[in-house]
Image (cartoon, rainbow, N blue to C red; front, side, top):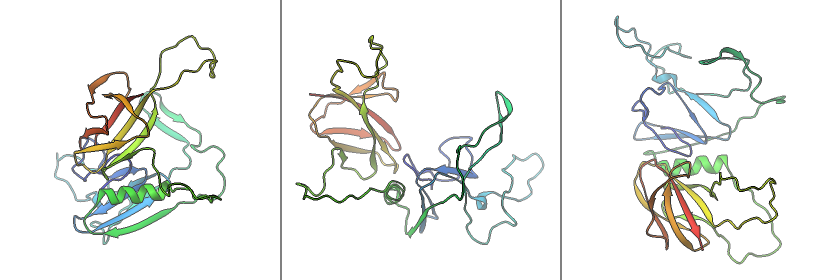
Length: 259
C-alpha cells in the first residue's frame, strides 16, 4: 500500500494503466500488508522505494509479454520481504526525450558531509489508511512546542477542521488572481481586502463521505471549482456549516466568499 497525502493503492492492481509496478515514491509513509497484518514505515526524507520481491525472474515463453528485469535480487522468491529506499543526492547525466543525454548539476547544491535519514516503524493488524496517514504526517511534520508564560483561554483550538478522519485540509489560501489591474508594485498603496478564498480537501482512504468543515468566519456563498480555480463546477447549498460530498481519493477545491 502506498502512503502520502493523496491516496493508497493496491499493487499490482494499479490505478494508472502503464504505471510502474516495481517501485513507488512516497512523501510521508509506505505501508506493506497481506490483508491480515501490516508494517508501516514513516520517513522524513522523500524516498523512492523498490520492492524487488514483486519482480518475477522466471523464464518467459517465447513471444510472451516482457516483464521488468530482476533488480537487487540474488534469488527468487526472496526468503523474506525486502524493501529498498533510494535517496538521490547527486546526478551527473540524464537521458531526456527532447534533448537526449544531458549533463545536470547536483540536485542539492552545496550539500556537504554526511546525510541523515530518519525512519519510524509500526506494526498492526488489518491495514488502516487513517492510522497510516496520521503516523506519516505526525512523524514528517511534527508540531513545534513552545513555552508560554500565561495560560491560554482554550487549551486546544483550530481555525479550520473537518469531522471525517479520512479527509484532510490540504490548502487554505486566497483565490488566485491573474488579472492585471495596473499595479506596478508588489505592495500596492491601496490593497484590497480579500474576501474570496479556496479551501482544498483530499480524501485518502477510498471512502466517499459527506464532510462538514468548520471555519472561523461566516460564509456568504460557496462553490466547487476546478483545480486551476478558473471555472465553477457547481454551487454549494449547505454553508452553515459548510457541508460537502467528496468521492474516494478525490481532491476537492471549494471557493468561499466570506461576509
